[in-house]
Length: 453
DNA sequence: ATAGGGTTAG
Image (cartoon, rainbow, N blue to C red):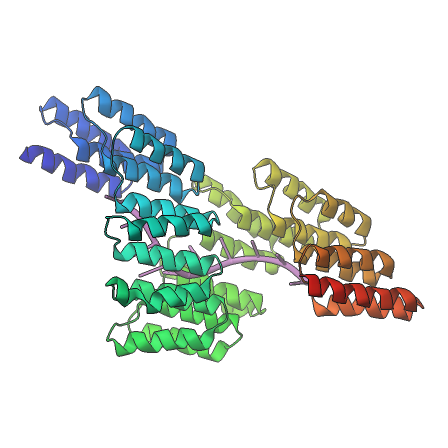
């Protein structure tokens, strides 16, 4: 019995360091010494396979368990559910849930927490809310994480006021806000540009004697940089350093991207160098941040070098990587290459990446190929206000005001806003070319559309 | 075993 516990400690540690081969070898050695794996051993494996290999590989462990005469339990299924939820695979989450119920295993509050989290991640807040109500009304006790997932989900899905209300009601549920809880709210409020409310939470955090951590600081720093308060952002940064919090990949990416966005390439570069000398291990997001810097510098060659480094390192490019490259190619005037990369991106399954399409629409317009841009626009499954705005502005630049007016209207009818400058350009353009009647008609229709939406 | 901060386009 004791030996199986030692075996499990050993296996958990190998799983944590992502060394599946060693974990498997320990199982083989154990069996040879007559130390048999138990349900805990297999649960550790299921979780590790979920994280390192994939869901199907993890699921196949269940077969091995049955062959060894061990029955999967709620932890086994919770690991599978968490693995699917991490990848936002709602249907797999539901399948595992269903299978667990059919196997007669009673889900616990963690199963429901994970299910709720997944509903939020795939943008189904109503379903998540229903689960939350079930947890509260059922005989399971919600835990702190239940509330944190709920608060974060509400914030991310645009229900910041509901999140604030729940936050203010936490004590009625018998919970005291933790640091995580405050970080969730501060982030949500910052993203919603409710800086004063965010500051209030931060102040309350200090009053309750909880020290902010590096996540708090990074969140607030990002918020300052977003609202162009650079001096304040930099002050938070030095405060963070003075308190002894080292920058991690998150903080570096935050500051580097903000500097790139405002054209402070030299400063951004010095943070890139600092990040490298501090030995921060590059993950996909930091690669994307670096690639973006090189693209903005016009050094596509190094950008591509990093792109290959991503793939060599066993990471997979995501929609951000592709968008950054496509935008870089467009800005360098290499539209044909950008179009080819867009096509490649679509074959890789990122065919609904609106931002990349928008980059190319803009690129095509800027290189004088507006009709190709319109064709691309028409081929898009989903169009957002960026796409409309870009086309409308560019149509005005080549004095195709009637076409721009038509597009502007269909945009508003879809319930999307365009920049005021785009509206101005169309109206002024129509008037300037003597189409007074059309201009007045458009103005009226715009007002109608605004009232209707 | 679940929860919080970072990357893209006008």
